[in-house]
Length: 149
Image (cartoon, rainbow, N blue to C red; front, side, top):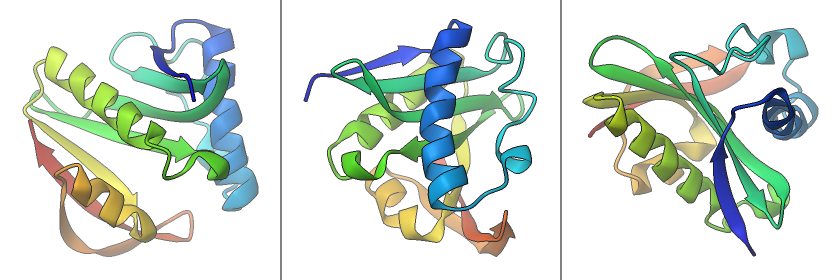
C-alpha cells in the first residue's frame, strides 16, 4: 500500500473526497445525498475555514474527512469515511492524525466529533473520550467525542 494524504485544493480533489463519502455514507449506510452533501462541500466550500483531506492508496481515493471551525478553541472533525476494503489498514488513523495536525496548526485546543457507535473504539485508540447520550443523526446512532490537543 502506497498511502498519501492530501488537502483538498481543487474541484477534482473534492470529487475524490465525495466519491469515498458516496460509497460509504450514501451507498453502504443509506444516508440521503441531501443529508450528506452540504455547503461545506459545494462550490469551493473547502476554502477558508474548512479543511478537507483525502487519503490515496496508489493514487486511488480510499478515505476522507474534514475539519470545521466550531469556535475559537474547538475544531469539529466530520464526514470521516474509509472504503470498506481499506478499513483496518491504517489509512483511517493516518487521515485522522493529519486532520488533528491541521487543527493544531490553526491553534485549536480541542477537537470534537460525532462518532457512529461502531467507530467509538477507533476514536478511543486515538485518545478521544465519549460524552453525553447516544443520539440519532440520519437515523444512525452517534455519541459526541472530544480530544484535547
